[in-house]
Length: 147
Length: 105
Image (tube, rainbow over all chains, first blue to last red; front, side, top):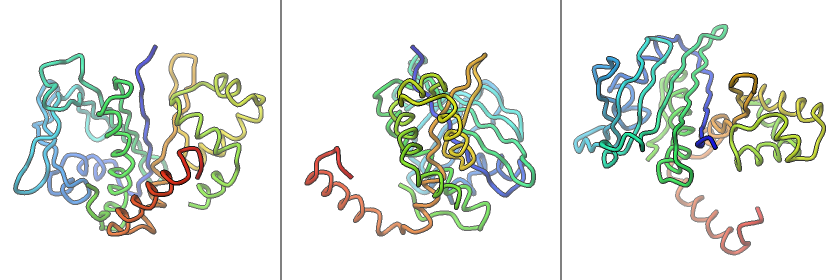
C-alpha cells in the first residue's frame, strides 16, 4: 500500500520568482516561517532547516534532488537524528506555476510513515507556513509567530 | 473566501472532506463507495470543493486522486484569530473535548 501523502495548494498574487525566492531567502523565511533554509541549492547538495535567530537550532536536514528555478524544487526532508537512515527520509516537492495573474504553489509531501511524529508535525505545519507566506507576499505582513 | 464558506455550508461536502481527512488521496470510485452516493453527485460536490481550493487533485496514471487541502481554512483562521488567543482557544477546545467526548463538536 502507498505511504501517506499530502498535497497543499495556495494561490498567491505574486510572480513565480518572488515565490521561489521567498522559499529560499533566509531574510524572508525568517519573517513568515521563523526558520531559515540553508544550502547552495545544487542537486545533490545538503540542505538544512534551522530556527531563525540566535540559537539557530538544526531542525531538519536533507538533500536537494531537483532545483529548477522558478518552477520546481524537490528536497528530501528528515529529522537530524534520521540523517543516516535514508529509508526514513520523506520528500517535499514545491511546484510554482503561473495561473493568470497569480501563482499556484503546490507543496507535495510524500514518503511519510503512517502514524509518525513527522507526519503529525508536517500536517499541522504546512497550512500555517503557506498561509503565512501568502500573507507576507500579498500584504507585506507575515502572520504572528507560528511556533 | 465566499467560495470556501459556500463549499463548507453543505453537510455532504463536509462528509467528503472528512473522508479525505481519514484517508487522503482517494479516487472518485472509492469516495462514492465510502459515502454510498452516485458518481454524478460526488463529482458535482468535488467540483465545488475544488473550486474553493479545499480539494486538490493529482493524476497518477489513469487515476485521479483527491487530496484535502486545508490551507484556505487556515487563511480564514488567521484572519480572525490573533496569536494571543490561540492558546486560550486550544485550552477551551481541549476542555470541550474532555467534557463532551471526542465524538461531538
